[in-house]
Image 1 (cartoon, one colour):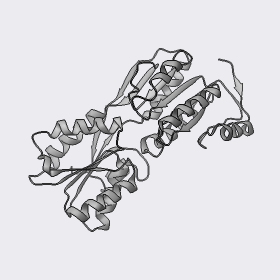
Image 2: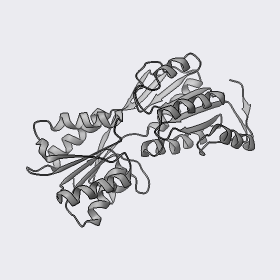
Image 3: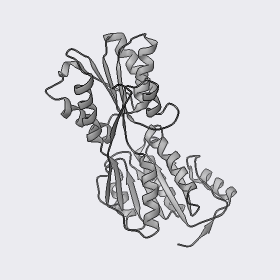
Image 4: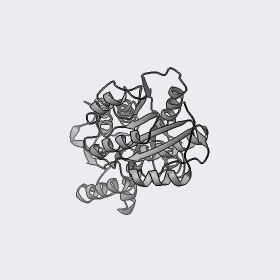
Length: 307
């Protein structure tokens, strides 16, 4: 791969001209690989975390430069973002699809030109070099089993806070949860809210629920951000005794692991960070190594002391 030089000023101009999300990494020295990253919506915490982890990975390898693009939840914009990344001359593309349909034709076209790493959402085609996903069904199953075996008592009201409507990740977590509790947890005791992956949305939905129902015993949110939002709602309304379970288990201040340690969450289902693995895999591909076609990240239940 021919080494290239991209001055800082030119890089920033490129970012403005192409509409890059202003979190592009620009080096002032030579680099060998330019990786384009198309993210469906960085408002989703796992994708925001992906930017941070890929940035850290890039800093460990001075041969690599990365451009990030955020589709803000729009499949149409994601297609435009990918075209713009191709115009930048990327050597490899990392894509977190917005859904399982919109990128099928685009990926079939791209795979004839360069390596493609897909992460998170099944793109509905096998036209990629590697697909990396969470075992989202298992995440839901683990949550259901934990609730039934460790937390549920007859008559308890269980709140499930899902991600965005139409999200394949949310759908798989819901399927795993429902299969785990089927026949053991009465359907009338389960209440579904849509938190859209966001803390403030989950907080508002939980407030609405508490105003109308005034009782809740267990909350399972499909990420830690929404679990924390639900916790803030119950705290504001002075409701106590609710068990909170989230997903992600990120490190750092107010990440899932910290929330469990503080006693805010009773448990989180930790998923090893997908961005680091995607970046490592991309560099291995560019270095000419053989990689697996399909990688699955397995979850782990993390509980607080005494659980």
